[in-house]
Amino acid sequence: MQVITAAAAASLVRDGDTILIGGSGSGHAVPEALIAAVEHRFLDEQQPRALTTIHPVGLGNRAEAGASRFAHEGLIRRVVCGTVVDAPPIAEMASRDAIECYTLPQGALSQLIREIAAGRPGLVTHVGLHTFVDPRLAGGKQSKACSEDLVELVTVKDREWLFYKPFHIDVAFLRGTTADEDGNISMEDEAIFGEMLSMAQATRRCGGLVIVQVKRLARRGSLPGKTVKIPGMMVDVVVVEPEQKQTYQTFFDPAFAGQLRIPLDSFPKLPLDERKIVARRCAMELRRGAICNIGSGICTGIGLVAAEERILDQVVLTNEQGLVGGAPASGLDAGASRNYWAMIDQPYQFDFYDGGGLDIAFLSAVEVDRVGNVNISRFAGRVVGIGGFVNISQNARTMVFGGTFTASGLKVEARDGKLVIVQEGKHHKFVEAVEQIAYSGPYGRSRGQTTLFVTERAVFRTIEDGIELIEIAPGIDLERDVLAHMAFRPHIASQLKLMDARLFGAGPMGIAGEMPGEWRVHERLKAAS
Image 1 (cartoon, rainbow, N blue to C red):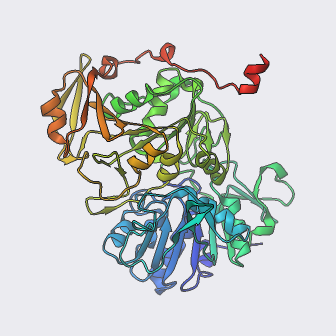
Image 2: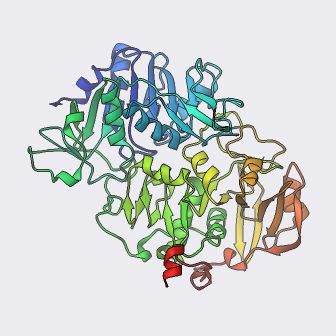
Image 3: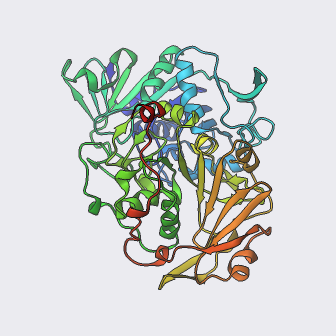
C-alpha cells in the first residue's frame, strides 16, 4: 500500500477507464478529493478522456460537487448509476445525448457489484420488471446515445426475470475514516457503509486499482480488527484528506456516526407547510412494530414527525443506505440517520427489501396516471433516475407515495384545522399517462400490493381498475381544487372522508396512543405461549 496525493492518484487514471465510485448522495462517504483531482487534471491536461463512471447512488450537492465534476466534454463517455439528480450538469449532458446515461435500480447495481466480486455471471432479479428498466420498455437508458443493452429479459423455470450484466472495473475510488500503515480501512466517522467492501473485492477481482480516501493515518496494528471495513490486502493506494467532511453540508455529526443518540426534542421541527402536512398524513399510516422504508424527498419528513409525535421507538424506520431504526435524515443530508439501531452494508439492506421485508414504504411521486403508474425518473425534459425506488416500491407490502398535489409555485396555508390554497401550482402531477414508468400500478395490484397516494389536499388508493379518491382536506372544494387539476377523473369513494383536522393544526397531533398493530411475534412463539 502506498500513501500518495490526490493529484498523484488522478494521474493513475487512464483514457477509457471504468471508475467505480463509492458513497451516497450529498457527500456521504463520497471520495470527493479523488473526484476533484480527476477534474483538475482534465482541465489542466485534457486527460483522462472517455471515462465510464459507475456509482449505485447519485453523487453530488446538486451543484458543482460529486459527479458534476465529470461534466466536461470529452472527460466522460458513459455514466451508469442509480440517479443523476444530485449532479445537474450530468443530467443536462444526458438530456441532450452528449453522453451515454443509464439509470438502473440502486439495489440492483449494489448487488451486482457483489456478484462481480464473486466472479458470478451477473445479477438475476425480478426488480425492474414492467418499469422503464425492463428492456421491453427502455432498459434503463436515459439518452439516445446509449450503445449497449445492460439489462436482458430472461426466463427461468417459466418465470420472467431481469439479468443485469457485469462490467469490468479499472479503478475504484472509495472512502473511509482511518487507514493504518498496512492499508486497513476503518469507517468510524462515516454516516454510511455503502458497499465499500464489495467494491474493493470486485475491483480486485477485475485486476483493477483500489484507491481509498481517508481522513487520517494510524500506526500498523493499532486499528481494532472489528473496526476494519476494508482489509489492507485489497487496498493499493491511500490518499489522506484531513478536512474530509461527513457530508457536503455537515462537517461532522456524532449522531450520524452512531457515536451518540440525541433526545427527541433535539430533532429539527418542520414548519407547518404542505410538506409537513404530507409527512404527517403519511405518518398516520404507521403501525406499531412496522418495518418501514423512508425514501428521499418529501417523505424524509416522516422521521421528524415521528420524533415530534413520540412514536419513533414504536416503529422501525430504515433507509436503503443500510440504516436501521431511528430517524432517517431529511433535506440534503438524506441517506444518513440519527439514533439508528444498526448500520449494515447497502447490498444486504436491499436483499432484505427485495425479499419482501418491508411492511410499509414511503416514497415520493412526481407523476401519477389513471392506472396508478408512477414516474419519478424523467419528466419535463429532466433526467433524474430512480435510486432505490424500484427495489423498494415493487417489494413493500404497503406502498405509500407522497407528494404535493401540484407543483411549481404551489403555496398553501393551514388555518384553524383547514387547508387554504393561496397559490395553485402550475404543474399538474396527476396525468393521463406518465412519461416513464418507475412503478407499475397494474403490476403492483397483480401482486396483491396495497397502494396509497398522499397529498396535502387529497388521498387516493389503487383499486382494480384505477385509483379512487378516499379523503379530501377540510376547506377544499372537490371540483375546483382537486378534479379540475387532474387529467383524468378518478373513482370517488361512496363515503368520501375528510382528512384529519389535526394535520392542519399547530403543535403535535397526539397520535401516539392511536397507532394500531403490535410488535410482530413469530407463529411458533405464539403457539408456544
